Length: 467
Ligand SMILES: [Zn+2]
Image (cartoon, rainbow, N blue to C red; front, side):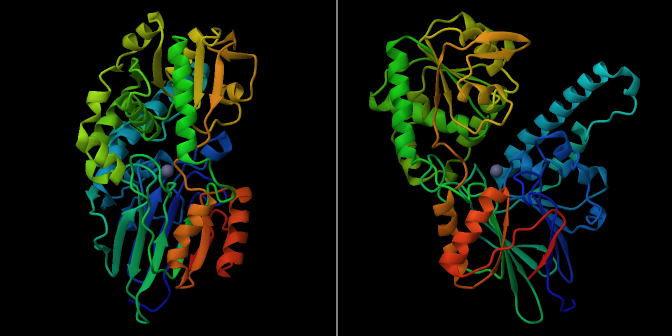
């Protein structure tokens, strides 16, 4: 081993929130931490290629902080380029990554078929980003790691994965790199969840670091408290039940859907709300819910106490799993009160669209928005109070009540990010702010300067930072 310092190249999520990927090079090893998909505009998605610095066959290992597509979605490109090494993640991360990546391959194939129909002349030249076979190849390389215990991931590099509180299986990772002048510690926060969120344990910060990569998605603000958001949701539900209304909740399949189900179960159990039919109308959310149920060891104390009293299934006897699209369509013929949880979370695709199309014109419908709605999506138009939205080419008048709940975010706000950093601040590490736009990471950098006297680095794509 030579005595040059380990260095990290930013291959995504630098000034942006998608495409998370870090190439770590030490004297003796080359590792990748996350390899996520760029998502958003077409220009952004054109970055979904193998960066030339990567040299996939020469990598010694890949480490995953969590299963979200923007952290795992480029992995099949490694298989395509001949990578044959291990991919490390917690058991829940591996199970959820299988769900996420197989779905991504299907979505890409469907996109490709649509493009071919629109442009038959260019049909031969069009290729999917990757195939289901490449996804399966990647899934076969995944190796489960335990929480907290150091794992040797390459020559002279030990990794420790600890709770990040962001999604089931999510972790922050500390690499301890052997060096002639003493071990060097590099910490990746991964995506951090807000403290006190339902179901999952809170993040567990590291105490030591020489170099820290800290996410900054909401570095500029704090969210509304959960307790307040849950009270708002309960009031909406009580009113809907009294009016025999349909409640439509556009929801992401992993995380948000399970949080909403758990909150409904708690309301039914306490008697504050009469049990009403709840339709989980998403094959992916049904599968993700099963994976959650298989990992009670990852639940926080509150959730553990709740399920030890009695299983949630007993509170959710009115839960209907709609796997098939016929089952989904049948929900249209049912009278309220009822709740529908369906994707996509931003109403830009998926089954939620046909529910909205059938029910937005009725003042008896409540739409509950529980997540971020991107510009240009039907979800954003509803949040903005538009009187008419276009769904499947048809203009639908909006007479439904639209409620926006701000407190269900899966990302830590500014106060929690600073709390996470406080634990390593004593080591005076070099700090790099990633996974955030400038308007979020600049205010966080300012807070870090005031509070801890550190000058955070705000890198761009391709920048290299050494310990
Ligand atoms: Zn994430």
